[in-house]
Amino acid sequence: MEETILKFKKKGIEEPRLNAEIILSSILKKPRSYLYLESEYLIPPSRLCLLKKLVRRRSSHIPLSYTIREQDFMGLKFRVTPAVFIPRPETEILVEKVVKILQKEPISRKQNIIIDLGTGCGNIAISIAKQLSDFKIYAVEISKSALEVAFQNARRHRVEKRITFLWGDVFSPLRRMNLRGRVRLVISNPPYIAGPQIKRLSPEVRKEPLIALNGGRDGLKFFKRIIQEAPLFLGQGGLLALEMGYNQAGKVEKLIIAQKEFESPEFIYDYEGIQRVIISRRI
Image (cartoon, rainbow, N blue to C red; front, side):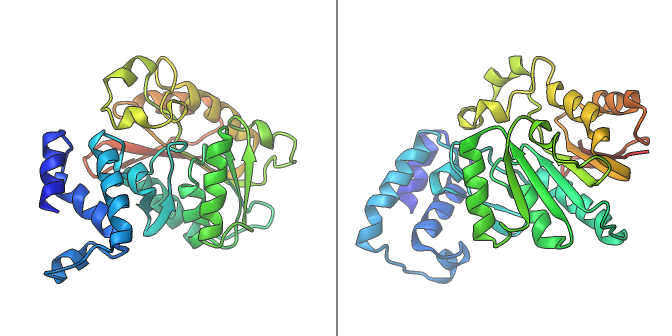
């Protein structure tokens, strides 16, 4: 493992030891703790070629999650490929907050639908489905390749019968489904990087799908669309919950207030003290 760590250092890979441990534990199909509990461990000859391949991929700044084809989220493991945006810990804050709110409120059969826009690998929809069994979830994604990954993840976690995956742009595949007033939650981690800023992102992040990053010239393109159309689906008291980028809270708040069909929003801070999640109710 020390040889791998040294190689990662030379290639400028951040946290080289952590990367080496995660790749090795993935190869061995063991938790990282195994590497410390066992003073000696052997890599099966059949896995050595794969180890070398993964090390080469990571050394060329392929994101770690793409390298091992997996990412943890909310205590679950999700398959990820270059077709999908890699789930971040910050998005767990979004999911944890809405689940906590909905668990405390009575469920109405007339308003028992959740819409996840831009589902990606399905991490938001699937994590919610695992915790809120009384809701029907519609997960929308414009990338067919990402949608296939999301469905595979839903089957992996045995919630595929409770999530309907739809191909389309934002609300477009939902408009003819007679959902007006029946939706309890619209949730999304939309693309929110301003187009001109994308070239300044790290090499790893720039290898993620551009469609999952680019929020238009000002980074607000999808917030505007979601906030404008969400009232057409949300029932009274229904929730709109969105993840935002750095320094976007005030701008997204103005969009919600201007809509005049939402209450004054609440902000949730991330681990670095940034206003990361905004939540509002349909009046």
